[in-house]
Image 1 (spheres, rainbow, N blue to C red):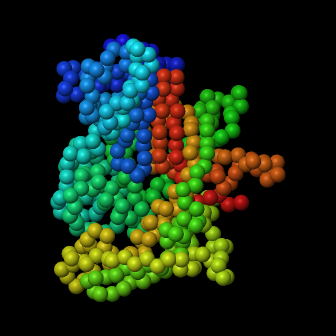
Image 2 (image 1 turned 45 degrees about the horizontal axis):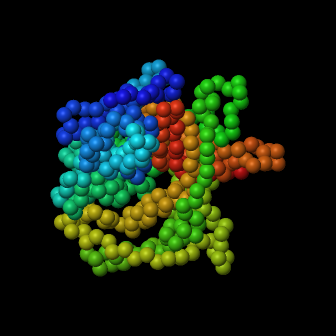
Length: 443
């Protein structure tokens, strides 16, 4: 097949190989020379990668292969930096290609791709009993149903449970379990796949927020580096940035995560467990005292100064939520050392942890920052540097001469990388990040 010019030393990366394979092909087809664009997506809510691939077809690839969906692309990418390792990921075609004619001889072909083990999850189903911590159950499912995909975790999840996976495919089961996982402090968990590492990552938000940012005290900045800056500094320039709002204070009140009453109905003991959730007292004060919100960035994004009839919003009861708790079907002894079912808790304090987990997960997503940067430092193949890591970002203020500082304290700080889009083109490699944070700098 004709080979157009592929990325080389003039860019920050190269395609070592983009190999197309299928049981319906007599031999693999090397496509690296005809690929024009490759986007690979990471998301902290998804335990798998997705991708989009564009290629120029001038030799009847589509006609000869007859794509049905289910063909395999093995993609090998390597940074041109010395000491870098090849990053290899396997994807399967999930959508039959879209085609746009350039002229009579050439057409642009687009593929939607999904990571291999997630694709094969779709042809399996689990209806099986499990017991143990959620981190242990997730590890078992991944080993037995997802091509022995390893799980990296700190095993900080609370509670031993018993459950039956209710006819879900393996990926659905992992997400279903992850949604109920929390630490002894109520911190939610994320389960995600990364470009550079083979393991799925399963970590709680509290652990992530107490790590050091990947760029330390060398922040990414939106202002342009000076002409005499070193190349490393230029690589830390933000090409584009914008904020978007996904959850206002009004939305958070509607979602019962500011000030609300919760009622958990214990059907086994025929009791009602009622408590008030106060986002300042129950979430942010403990986060500050435990230094999960770090010194210098521990100003909560919600305030007790908003009042109605001389009472703070967080002290009011803006909603009343009733939830039917479990029936404690696995309790066979009278002591508290029994095993819980899916979604069950033993005490009122434990039920409140579920609300804390929900609130923390909702609030941190409230005002995401979307940035585009040079991706050169993120694909050396030696480490994972995107989603699930913290990144230090500085946003300039609009009137530095009036404020005495050129840094916007509200918008700057340590952010959690929540989603990533790796855009590989022949001329360059850009990285688009969606970043979120729970606390703000004071001042």
